[in-house]
Amino acid sequence: MDALSQGFHSLDILGPAFLAGLLVLSTHVPLGRLVLERGIVFIDLAVAQVAGLGVVAASLAGFEPNGWSVQASAVAAALLCAGFLIWSERRVAHVQEAVIGVVFVVAASAEIILLSFNPHGAEELKDLLVGQILWVLPEQLLPVLIVYAGVLAIWLLVDLRKRRGLFYCLFAVTITASVQLVGVFLVFASLILPALAALKTRHGLLVGYAVGLAGYGLGLIASATLDFPTGAAIVCALALVTGGVAVARG
Image 1 (cartoon, helix red, strand yellow):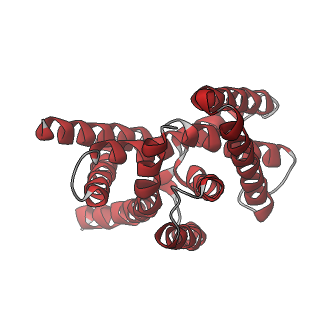
Image 2 (cartoon, helix red, strand yellow):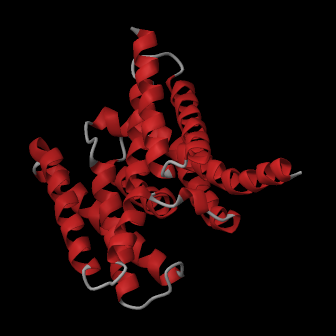
């Protein structure tokens, strides 16, 4: 009975975490492929870091950590970032990747400065980077599901390759939801690693989703059985699966 109870307890924890992973992959696999096509690989890190800066600023201002004020601050920060990147791509497209890198570094540095005023700043920074996917609650998933459903509907109906502004704005909203669910590192890994595995393959989306599912599944199992940090375990599992696909493909 003890083993059975422990199994159900693990399922109670791993189930919502795996569902959160499925939600993240639903949007990040197709958007990640667009990111690779556009050659702006680090855009997600920059936007995620700016969204995190919005969260930190709102928390420091005294707003409820999971309240709408914090969400609005994160979305506003991410959209401002998207607006700036649209502007920079039109004017200095030849150095856009450098601009994205500068945005990331400045946002991260500003975040560290703000967190220095918080006695629990180091822990909050770790949560923003690595995430707390293992402790995701089922009620947290519904708002994200609604946002992602809208994102996927637009992706299906509109050619985002031709709608640069819409792509950036949609990307900003998606990343904002994701970074608060799984953290900056896992957002980047979920966008880029499945997309890399699917390069130059038939049925690229299916390959990307399969790699993502395998990575999340293996990472969660490793975390549960070996007591690894969950977000980091999933990132490493995604990298291993992607590497395995690359080797198998030759």
